[in-house]
Image 1 (tube, helix red, strand yellow):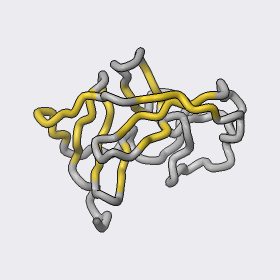
Image 2 (tube, rainbow, N blue to C red; image 1 turned 60 degrees about the vertical axis):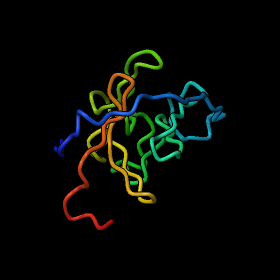
Image 3 (cartoon, rainbow, N blue to C red; image 1 turned 45 degrees about the vertical axis):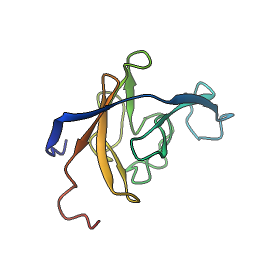
Image 4 (cartoon, rainbow, N blue to C red; image 1 turned 180 degrees about the vertical axis):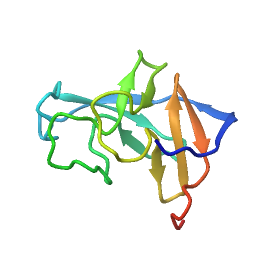
Length: 118
């Protein structure tokens, strides 16, 4: 797993989330029929149960790109489970530039990945 500097002192609590019906169009064989979306500190929405843009196993229909644990709002997202090699359990947004993770209901900003242009 890639390691980046996590600014643990600079956290933003998870405040907004909702469930969306995917009607099994997501391609996962083991989908419940709904996905959890959370609002990022940038204002954009993240489909945690969706497929990552940089998924390393795009034809696999059983893994998850992000693994979700806990009960709302105190959820944690990581790579502990049947997953692919994309990222390290974090989310990266290009516009505006933001990179971080969700742990125990708080967003933590991480440093920008080395070699990735902003």
